[in-house]
Image (tube, rainbow, N blue to C red; front, side, top):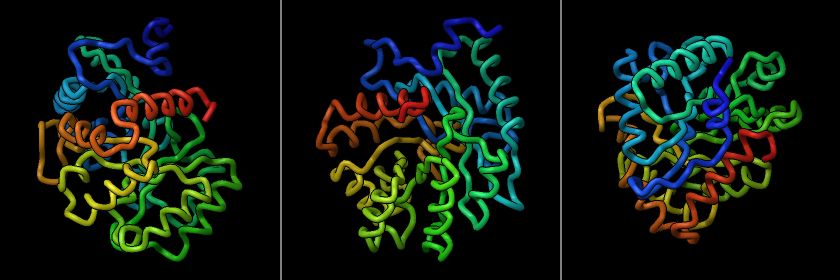
Length: 266
C-alpha cells in the first residue's frame, strides 16, 4: 500500500518553502531511464531530480517520447518505470513527486491509438501531451486533433514555440486555442536555447496569456546540455514571472491548473 502522504503528493499543492523562490510542476521531463533519448541510467535520473528540486520543482510529469516506429513505450511500461523511480527517490531522500505521462508524436491515427488505450495520458487525466514536427504543420494535424477531441481526449501541445510554421503565423495559435488545445512552453525557449524565433514566440505566448503549463523538457541529468538547459530552470522561471501579465501570481495560476488536471477537473 502506498503511504497516504506519498499518494497525496500527486494532487495536492506543496507547502511553501523559504528555500525556494518558486514552487512548480515540471509538466515535460524525460526522466525515465532507457525509454527514449532522455536519461540513460538511474544515477542520471537521480541527478536530474536533484536539479529539478534545486530549481523549486516539487513534482515532475515523466514524459518519455512515444513515436510510432521509434519509441513504443506502453502505459504499463511507463507506470512500471515511474514506480521504480519513486522508490529510488524515497531511498535518496529527494522530495519530488512523479506522475506518469508521455510526449506523443502527433501522427495520423493517434486518436485511434488513444481510443484503444495505447497512449499514456498526463497522470491518467485523459489529457495527452502531443508534439509536432519542428518545421511545419502537417496536413493531418487539424483532423487528428478533432478526432482526439471526439474521442474524449484533452490535448496539450508541447513547445508550440518550436514549430516554425506556428511561429511565423500566430493566427494558428489562436485557431488551436479556440479548438480547445492547451499550450506548454519550454523553459529553454525563453533562454534562447532554440533560437530567436522560438524565444520570441514563447514570449508572445506568455504575454498573451496563452501559456497553460511549463516544462524543462530536460533530457540530461547534467545541469545543462547542448540541446536543453537541464532540469534546473530557475533563470527561465524569473523570465516567466517578468514577462507574464500576472507577474508573481502566474506560477500559482499554472499550479492550480495542474492540480485541476491531475484531479480530473480541468
